[in-house]
Picture 1 (cartoon, rainbow, N blue to C red):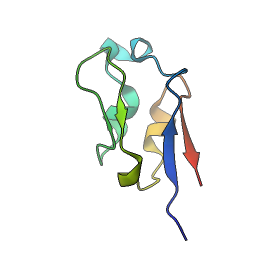
Picture 2 (tube, rainbow, N blue to C red):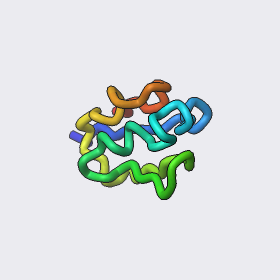
Picture 3 (tube, one colour):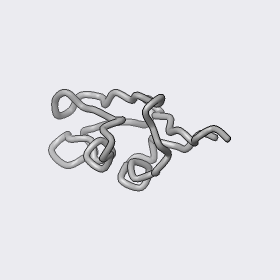
Length: 69
């Protein structure tokens, strides 16, 4: 059975809504599937490395991340 992955909705994502422009979801991702180079910049997502823990989903203030099955 395939592992669930997350998808980032770049239309909803806005790091300026996160504290100091630092993506809350990227901070919550222990595996660093979501990475952000600089504050205010859009995070990058590497879905092939995702383990489906959903920590990023609950951390995102803009509901820009969803679980894909």
